Length: 498
Ligand code: NAP
Image 1 (cartoon, protein in one colour):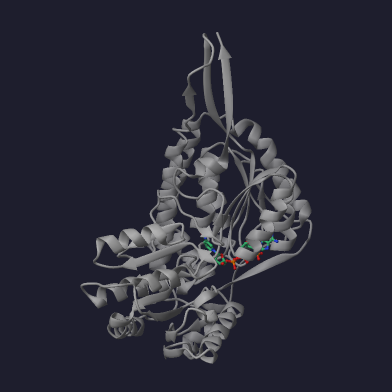
Image 2 (cartoon, protein in one colour):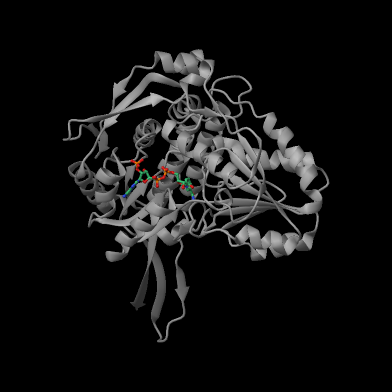
């Protein structure tokens, strides 16, 4: 259907012809030898089939990696500016197709349409940054120890990259891996989460339309065990860029270490907002609630703990309560909806279990936490966002990643305790502090054990700033921004006598 008529999301999805996608290998859509498919259903209309995909096997992975390996020989020799030019075109195509991609993203993942559009546009920004990086893959020149010798270092692409993504950001996460890989001259085999492969298929079409040669990017759909595992262990794969849970990430790192294969791991989080003081409680609450419940709390950088000084606790908790009450839960396309369903029933059950655990641990459920089943809610996995107070830092809901719309308020006596509690988790992805005191903000930025720190705002990142975590939240080079050079390239030292 042409977007010239500007259909709504509901119309576009209804008019979409349901099809079965092949894997994208060496520039062609090919069926798996398994003869089995995976069906993808609408996240907010459970019975509506969106598309079917290959339930792939190791044999499919082998074909894709071999294609990427073959393509690497020529792609790595394409001049950087030419690779960049293709990626600039790809960024333009993402923007030109923003409506369609956002409809697909919201349908398969559930997030509200505004967030989906924002994700696609953000992916375009990141692709454009990577395109620019292809023009400046820098080495060094160094003085020689002998006369008439020229010493330099150059950066070379490492080879075939296994890119593995989770389901929460099905457009920006693949682009965050594929665009820099291509910019630096690597080739890619991409495995999306098996619950959200639809937008990935569209990304393959747009990459090809932008001019990416056959075999440079390949898509294989299937489960972590049948596709992910053989992919990370394939002898021709030289780098693994993985985003997902910490447990799976650690397992991947163990496998990669045996072959000395580089990893870039973006893992889980339990991100705090420390609140010391402020001019306006409502402003702070708005920032926190937005960062806690965007994408139904299913962001690695979601704020899930509010650590607040005793003297501010009552006022801030009231402001948080008011903000959370204003969250409008609904399907992606509904006017005014600010929070969609969670990804599926299995994940909803896991989030609801944490709500029960919180109650049993003695935390006070101030608001929400119930499942929504009436009317259109019966068509998706919806819940009311939950706010707990009287949470203590040793409770499971204060330490474990829930990955859903649950926010915990922890009261502390002083700044030192606040910083200690903020660090008292295995994770170290992102953190915020709200304060009017310059010195406290600096001390926090210095002492917090996270990869990213935000002062007086939520945990949203920028399209050119390095993104990653400390402790159990990440390993290897940060993604986004120039730090990708460290992962996708390796140094070669050149001595040139003349
Ligand atoms: P997950 O279960 O770890 O899965 C992530 C990806 O890994 C999926 O494609 C999955 O395939 C695949 N996989 C599973 N087992 C594998 C194996 N043995 N070998 C290779 N691949 C395997 O994570 P998720 O539930 O999709 O996503 C939520 C998690 O991701 C949260 O912990 C969240 O914090 C984290 N996350 C982190 C960041 C970050 O930047 N730090 C960003 C987003 C999300 P299947 O889909 O087929 O299972």
